[in-house]
Length: 94
Length: 375
Image 1 (cartoon, one colour):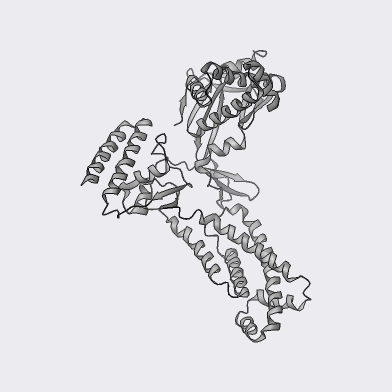
Image 2 (tube, one colour; image 1 turned 30 degrees about the horizontal axis):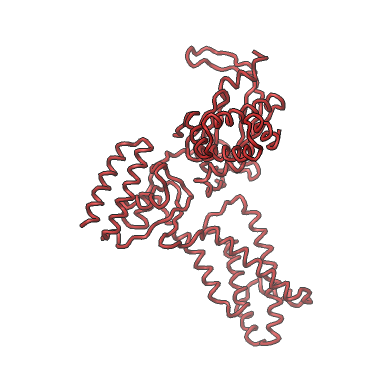
């Protein structure tokens, strides 16, 4: 499903025009991004939670140079699925 | 350290920024993620534009230990939703550390893989303190020198050549990622060859007009490069001067951009730019630029907002340093007023980040500075 299909489906559900929905969609994504870069994670019920954390620098082997490499500190986004989501995809097997 | 906000807070923020009801906002957010779930069920993957992609991944069966009973248990194979942020999100979130690059360590063994040199966030190491200004100033001076001697084209070319040679011999001043070094050398080599060809043809044209002086120069600078250039000169000058100018211009431009990487933004208004070194805190920076560490709230005020944690250092970022009216030893009333305002902000920021003790301390400081400002 690409963006336009998503927007279409959403606009039907929300009873809004597609332009309005697209605006909302874009602003939602920027809201998420903003919260993540401001250090505050958020969670979506029945889906999972997003958070950002600082990954400390670490050493790793670079096979191309055949040397150890120091990878710098980085702030990364983490996602952790909720148990509801996990169950949803694993029902059949359990 | 990341504080999480609740779903209702998220809805509220989203609704307010768009002027829609909270009900609509909740519907919207839930709708987006319901679609993601539908997509995952159908195709095993889904994505949110400009945010990231989700993928359903198989996790193999493995044995684990129940941490409470210490019993070995078998975790059955299952599926897991993984998330991969898109570049746009990754870069925005990584903003504070965007300037950091990986470096080669030169160790051949893989024994130290597990020894991550994790350092605490606020660690202050004044001894290891390196003056970043030095690094910043040197390349700009070179540039100025180059700009000041445009009278003779050939001199400029030579200087450029020297610069290029320096770059080959000495490591780059700003510690460029060594990863690219191999490429860089070959790149520099190409530029060198072009420059040699360029100077050769210049010599050819200049010798026609003023042979004596040029010969002196050639004799004076018997670098192997120029000997080569002489050889090149004997070869019929196939390339037109216009083309020559273009190539030398291009190389000049590229070397300039290279310098700019370390030169960074210049002075803006009354502020000075300052690039944070690793493990430096605003306290250290203040001591460095003002000569007095207690003036750091001024830096905080110029760069941060109430919502930032004052204790969080962000290496490899550029800070703006506001200038003082008086000196650090002799502050004017105006300076005190500014400092009081900044300190108040710091106090509020501390209060927001949950450090009430510090907040109190700094509000006391603010009151003190305010009294000073009225004297």
